Image (cartoon, rainbow, N blue to C red):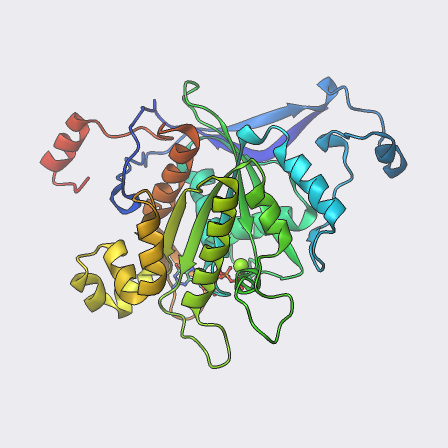
Length: 381
Ligand SMILES: Nc1nc2c(ncn2[C@@H]2O[C@H](COP(=O)(O)OP(=O)(O)OP(=O)(O)O)[C@@H](O)[C@H]2O)c(=O)[nH]1
Ligand SMILES: [Mg+2]
């Protein structure tokens, strides 16, 4: 019997090569908006040779059980830190075929917008990017699959879709996304977005009242220490007010940044980094004077708002990026996205893909002639 794969593919026109660009904010994207033909991938289960029933007892017999044969977890439970043995095992697992794995970690205080940013990237990839994009179910837990669909519904404006709640600190989420560009000359990418609770970023900040604090949870350090390609997004929400008794947002970012520096120094590697000034729709609505004062430049804006973090961040490397991250217009009534805007998600994805492929663009870049014609027609891009 043929099984229908729930993940659809969309097509994009021929794509082009591009040299790495230097500013996330200034990346321009020529996003084709015309209707694209939908195709449905079909998976032929009859062709699979793995029809032997699989049991837990059996899995213990094999040292290296194929991913596809593992018993599916319901969630990535991290109530407790990984034990030394589990940590070692996890590192080995990550390091297998590490050069083909691309992890993206998001750090930032609770409610700064991490989960929504990941949601906007997934929505962009599934609906605008083209090529083949799907969640790899073999590598996903039940909670991840549920959250994946919940995010899709939310961004697709499904009425009665479940609200996105604060990320549970007893678990974390990995979205293993497989992306195959339409243009077969461009490399496919296995990209994993890691959604961690803001409390796990806060844990990096040393507090004398919390004995677990002062270091990052070790499921995160395992990823950072492994050989997978990891890119980091620091999320700063200007609209969040530091509450009495809570750790100031900038201290959380500084603490995480310091831990990252330590790992980089001890392992002689550097992670590509981006600073996402989240909920930019709110920044534009309530803090426009500061945006204008800084010439619409996210780097200058960050240097004014959070100098202690921004100085270290931008001094570390000229390759560190920043962006006013907007995903559309929100209702003032609730967390309802009224209209999706693909520009920032596409810039962020483009940066991630280009960092991972050494400068290949995932989309068709406008040629000089296209730009001239658009200008001629009075369009801005
Ligand atoms: N106006 C506006 N609101 C946003 C935006 N992104 C997220 N929000 C709102 O901000 C709130 C928190 O967003 P989350 O993505 O859940 O925050 P988080 O960083 O994942 O929080 P934790 O999971 O608790 O660490 C939600 O109520 C969203 O509706 C945005 O771009 N603009
Ligand atoms: Mg969250």
